[in-house]
Length: 102
Image (cartoon, rainbow, N blue to C red; front, side):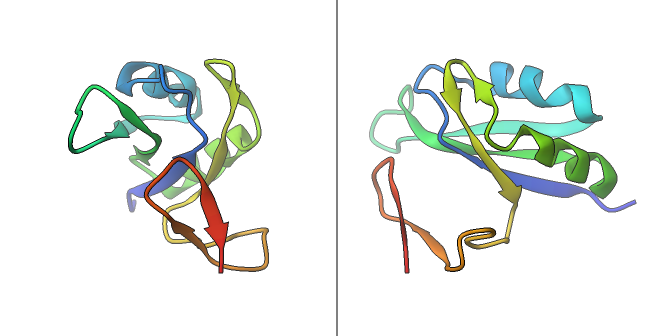
């Protein structure tokens, strides 16, 4: 079995690795759940993160989390590497907490 990583954006500022793990662990065994933090302030979330599952099957099931609420915010979930899936364009991280197409 091949591991599979999901990209999660739209996270609440208060979401940490533990709450991300809790939200996704119902779909299968996780290798890691990691919220990306600001370089200049490692206590501050950048609003996105990654969840790695032991199997592609579990990761595919966890795509059900797309548009669900975690810590009061609706999150967007996609397979890591699926740029702009469902939007008809590619998404780029612009350094803030917003994404732009293009």
